[in-house]
Length: 334
Image (cartoon, rainbow, N blue to C red; front, side, top):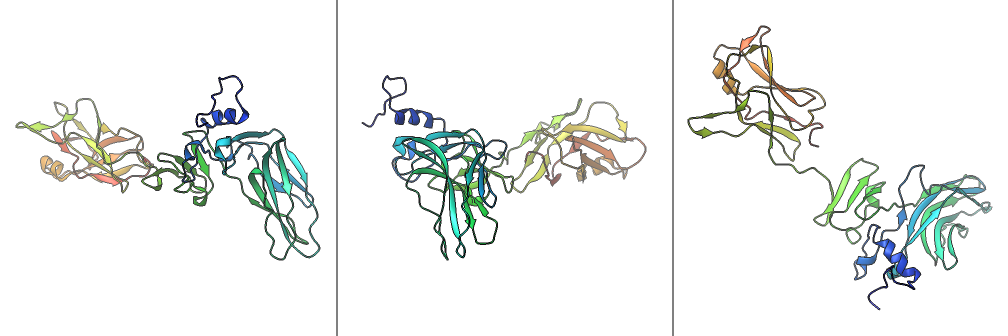
């Protein structure tokens, strides 16, 4: 039967119930027709390092966790959501007298339920981990060598809810092209980057850029027009290179303004990590005509302030051009 029995129907089977739960879990493809019902097996992210495996000379300790365990060869059987509610301690057999071995710690599901087990590998000069025939989620490998402390290799992978952000410890843990789906998000724990799967690959997620946003003009300041000509309205843009660009012509408030500084506008978001000063446009210097120079400063709060080069108050020009002013972006819009 292609249509599986929904959970509200009497007599629903266990596999149907598991498939119903799969709707809320993150998918993971394999490149076949059953990708629509596949889920990503893994440990559910949480505090206290869920599913972490540690070892002493004679014991293995597994931290509590919840996880999704799935049979990749039979996805239509539905995933298993399992819980280890307390710390699990397992005995670790002593090392061989002369040979090394690799043990495997796994979360397993079988007909009789769920368990966390330590599978002991065969001692050999070139040991390999034991192969399991059950449906399982690997948690760790343990290298056991004569005269040495056991060495842990963390095999945990994480999963997430449908549409959630998947945490991965490195690029190697990102879902492959076959496993990922367009619009899927992953957070790189090693680099702190948020990445999105689009155009057939993983890319650093960036806020939409290359669009002009309006500046919030201070009281009395307005876009400049003259002789029926309209100039660019005051705005800012963050380019793909991270530089912030300002543009636009402004008209100052009516009347005479004499001050050493005056706020003319504000960015639509917080400012840079440290204040940034840029020379005012050449048009301002021409308009002044008296030799006084001005600078535009963008504060950490995002204020756009016009300063004079003299200590005493000066008369500000009737108009101001922001065209060509730019500075490197550090935090704003990033």
